[in-house]
Image (cartoon, rainbow, N blue to C red; front, top):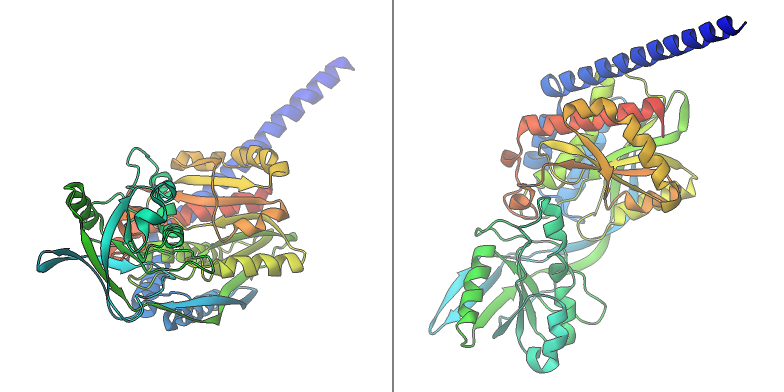
Length: 461
């Protein structure tokens, strides 16, 4: 009897390992087919070309944003999904205007800086603002200088990117508060305008826009200048004499408009109530084509669906592609989507967002509601092993602004992490155009995201 028990145990272990190996082989083969299709037959580069060249800039509330909604809706419909819909949201409608400038006054002449008004900024009121400029390196300095030092002045926020950060998003995070909150904070001390050093590690003449957030009372015009111009201005101030700037802008906030996020899904064959979301944000700033930010994320998500259809893959769980509106200056799409999903008592087992550009894939980072995070992370690391051979990692970290409101559903939120070294050369600039996206890097990103969706769909979390 004991020999039979031992023999039975050995046979169980043998066949168990055999089944596991066969399973791993099947996964490896299917993932290889995902990469083969993505690198040779995918439509992703064509999708991005249309989004950049035919649709163009897509700032929420604009005609370009409306064209972007139509393009994404029609593309998802053409892929034969089970359902495609437009989810309404109310978005800000900010326009830049046709004229903006910043001049450094020197004797009877001036030096013209390369500049871009910050998103949501008010205008200079139809007139030029001229005042002494005061350089500060952070928000805390404003309180030290106080109203005595800042009233009637133009504040120049000049804290640079932290170049010691190997992941450039960390450098961005340590500098961006001066752009987001600087103008309204400076206004509280009587400043009449704000100039911000572009939030980038590049030293060039390309200005970077981006959102600024006012409170309801304190609003002054805010314009970003290029890093080369910021360095020049800082050197003039360092000489010790008073330096004067002239600034002018025509931007304005119009009444909010109705817009849409675009949603398409393939219903799960076994577990339709378990949703795997893959998405990016449809809107972009107005001075480029939104190629990396976030056209790449949108076409990554659409390519997941195209690849599944091309490989005749029938998912067990519901796979949903969501292209969010208004990430850049309001997050209306992400908020309205989470509200709609919660009202429908949905469960997002996993939500994956691509919003870091179309560069070479490095891996994924994740977060979740605290009570389930360790359990999800442990399972995902085991699940992820077939992708390690593609030099991809899976670790704790951020996910995405649009999917973050889904955290209360207690699934796992995942951010796609491509190489970040060049991202802030293009981020929020006129240089964020189709020509600056590498086709193969974009395709590899889609392959890695599709492979992760496949593994989650096969085994759950």
